[in-house]
Length: 169
Image (tube, rainbow, N blue to C red; front, side, top):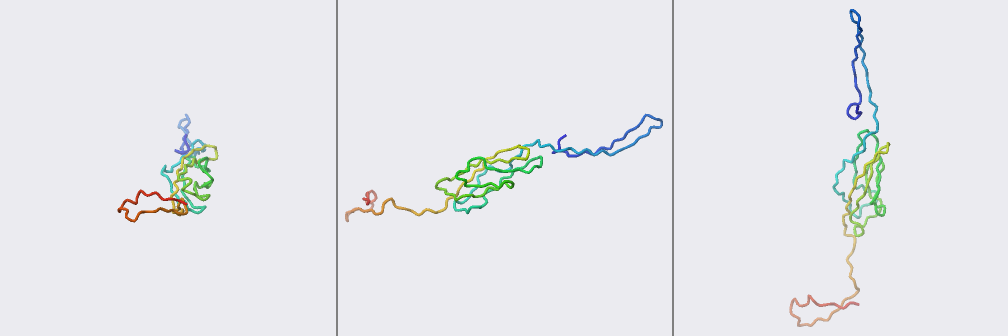
């Protein structure tokens, strides 16, 4: 019997004796199959990368990872690895991954988080969640030097100034 296929059976049982005339009796028997935690949770989340802007506020929801357990058990979610600098947090029971620290695409542009869904009986499954950090124009342009200088002859033909090296201070 498998609880996940059929969780109860109803039988009509009839008993007859060998007498003459035969006597009989009927009874309805209800059989309830007790569920055993015999299934491992399964992630039903796509392998597609999630995206978040580097200026997303702490607490911003990035993605919800969905997992199910055929036994109907509640699942607990956690991040096992790949969470550099604690950038993300995962809600224990909903599977929602959110921003937990300031992101900087110039330092890390992709995170691959190894996450786990575990049922109360200890059955667990892991899944890789990829998060891409989207660049925001948050860095001003800079010059390498404070000043540049070059003397150029006044009768230089047009287009010849391209390969002039400047002196720096």
